[in-house]
Length: 223
Length: 223
Image (cartoon, rainbow over all chains, first blue to last red):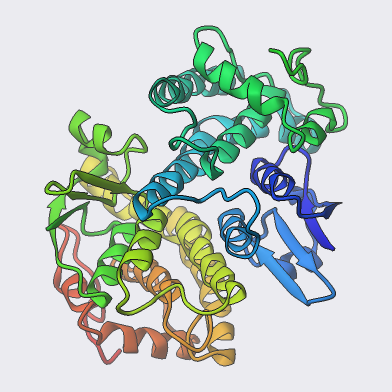
């Protein structure tokens, strides 16, 4: 069985958990906090980042969330998530990069820094200016998602894809950390409500990260 | 014909230029400086980043360097760069992410900030502490590459792959900006010398970015 090295608020690990859930690939979780990672973890992944997937029986180690997603796309037929023509697939991968890189850098990373790392590791209060800036940039990303959903059933086209999983993973962490103001984003809110009701999403919504509590609406599937 | 929006020291555009060169896909260059990008460029790519590839005849726009690489891997048979078993392909993609994300964040991005952006845009002197830190982290990455090349003909295995192109692209920008000290890295230096002699690499080595000049060894193919 696969072991997934992750921590509860890692958006890239969440993307892989959603993917493995949709594809019905069994796995168990191994907690790996990036700020406390030791040599054993760095030996598994020289990038020093979660997620990492390990299968001891086959002596396999997979690292980097996009490399992991492509691997399961190639090896598991169920629930294709990078599907369609090469153009469609390029659009899926473009959006995955937009959420993995831009949304993460603008929104999720500063929220994790201010509301998780400063609380758990550094024992400092959050910088309210940084939080305001992250929430402001989140509105810009949600505006773009609203526009996509106005034009397509799912973010990258007519079918659910890895782009939806990547976006839902980032948003779920940002929402947990109180960084998403849903007012004025009815399209994305509706898309996200559908997502929250999927079986692959339930384990994420019930999980908590120590002293950090999400807002009341976080795990409600009809909001 | 494809038009590639890029600027001379963009490592992600260089990766795509190497890939298109190896695959013999014709393209023309369009200069797009990220600090001066206007609405027209943001409309092409909401991530606001180079490279972007446009084919007007077919009304195609491709953005994100990994999405672009996967597209040409799927549509052009010549010079496969994400090849082999699913495990091999996962290893190639893991290394591409390592160079695109970790090497870039540790080495290329601070060098670009200190030696290009501060010179051309901000008109400030570079921060020598930031430069020293980038060069120190470069040694760590080159150590890892030395180790890979001790164990494999190419970075990801027995064949040249997108991992080699991604690494060469980052290193070429870092080397242009004087951030690579080759002493003690004979393996990687030998690998890079082979690379510099390839026809796909020559256009990069002869190009200059305005007032910023590379060190004398930069374009010499036997060093």
